[in-house]
Image (tube, rainbow, N blue to C red):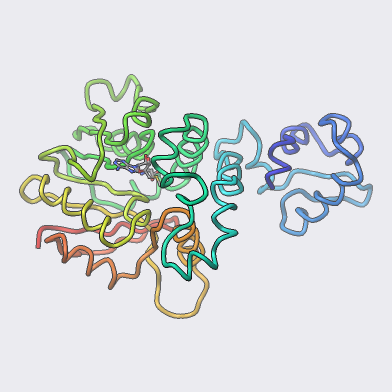
Length: 312
Ligand SMILES: C[S@@+](CC[C@H](N)C(=O)[O-])C[C@H]1O[C@@H](n2cnc3c(N)ncnc32)[C@H](O)[C@@H]1O
C-alpha cells in the first residue's frame, strides 16, 4: 500500500486503466515487480486487473488519489511509517515489559518526538486530521449538542472535529487546545466561524481551558496508560462549568471473541503510545478515579463511540 501511494499509482489510473508497463514507465519503476505488487493488492480489492492485463481503480484504490474527497493516502503513510513498524517489531519486548518500545527506539515518547521533529509531526497530524474527517460527521450527527455554550476540544489536533461541531451548532463557541506546534497549523479559519473560536496551547497534564460546558477528548484517552488517562480526566473535571460534561470519543472494546476494529487498534496503541482501547467497565473505573460518572454511551456510524461522563 505504501509503495502504491508513494508511486502515485491511483493518480496515474484516474484517467483510465493502464498496463503495469505503461504505469512503470510513468513512475520510473520495474514493470515486473510492479505487476506483482498490483496483483497482490487486487486480492484486497485495491486495484483490479482485467483480461487484457490492464489495472483499474476500484472504490478503495480511488481513496488513495491525492484529490480524493476522503483522502486515505496520508493514513496509509502514517500506519506504514517506521514510527509504527519499528516498535511493532518489538512487540515481544513490549508484552514482556508491559510498556512501549517507542522511546528506546526514537529517544523520546511519541508526542515529544513529534514536537521535536517538525516533518514527522506533520505526517502524524495530517493523517489524524484526514482520519478524523471520515468520523467527524458521524460524531456530530450522533450527539444532542446544547443550543449554546462553550465546547473545548482537548488534544483537538488541527481542529477538524471542532470545525464540524461549530458549523452544525451556530449558538456554540469553541476552544481548540493542543501543543503549540499543533494548534498553529489549525484549520479553523473559515469565514462562517469568525469570532466563535480561539486556540489555546498547552499540555493537558498541566491545565486545560477553564469553565467550558463540554470537553471533547477524541482519540486521546486511548493514547495513555491508566494513570495518565486519569490525570487528563481529572484536569477536565476540575475545570468544567457546573453541569459540564466530558465526552470521551474512542472505540469501546466489546466483550466476546468477535472481531472488532478496537481489538486491532488496541495493539497499535500498545505498540506506539503505551495506551489502550478500553471496555465499558474499564472506562467506568477511570471516570470514577477522576470524580466523574459514565452517563451513557452513544454509538456513531464510525468505529468510535461517544462516552459521556458527568460529575460524580
Ligand atoms: C491521536 S491524536 C488525536 C487528535 C484529534 N483529537 C483527532 O481525533 O483527530 C492525539 C492528540 O493529542 C495531542 N497531545 C498529545 N499530548 C498532549 C498534551 N500533553 N497536551 C495537549 N495535547 C496533547 C497531540 O498533539 C494530538 O493532536
